[in-house]
Amino acid sequence: MVNVVAGVIMAVLVVAFIVIYFKVIRQSAMTHEEEPMTMQDLLGISEIRDGVVSIGENRHCKVIAVGSINYHLMSDEERDRVEGAFGSLLASLSFPIQIYVQTRLLDLSHAIEDLSRDIENAPRELQPYGLALKNHLQNWIGVRSVMLRHPYVVVICENDNYREARRDLEHRQQMVVEGLARCGLYARCLNNEEIADLFYAIYNSKTRALIAPLRNALGASSSMYVRGVPAKSKAGGGLLEAESEKEQARVAGQ
Image (cartoon, rainbow, N blue to C red; front, side, top):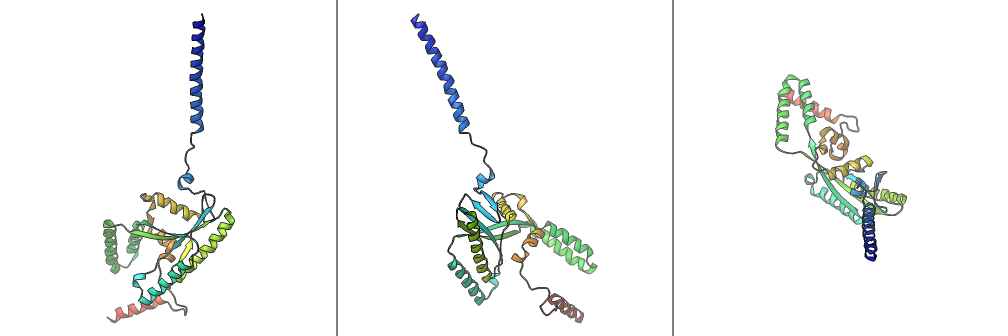
């Protein structure tokens, strides 16, 4: 009789142990179950506000888009002036910066479509030249990729107070922009949408969505990448018109 009672007690204890064991395992799994990772967790960015990228609680930065100059077409004196200005900018910095260059494919299909319409509306004697240009452009983009390069300067500030960090970043950004202007480089800060687009391009570098139409690329950054003489001088004379008249006179004289 004693053995029967002891066996029953042991069976109850075993069953109770098994029940408690699986209950503890289940609770532990539910406790340690991680929530799905968001894009903010993946990128390490807490927010993008007022053109400021906040990384964590005390690290903030601004992104400055920088234009370009034809350095190799400059004279030695002009090169020395640019190098001296850039060296002075670097020597004046008391805060960290990061230089980043992004390259994107450039879509010329819309440019070819616009050229086709221009050829149809052009005088008959000029249409063969337009067709030759169109064929050359189509053959050229068929054998090589046209790339558009975007340089950026990232200004960084570490501060627990967002307002103070934003004020410091604006001061630092102004120093960088003015220093680059002395080098002959146009620079401007990116807004929230442009910063988001920049990060999208970084993490989707092989996506065809990154291919920028030519009209958008030049329309958004023409002052950054296209530098030329104005159409009219301060005296009111049309430079382009004058050159056109000279060319017409030369052709007529022939």
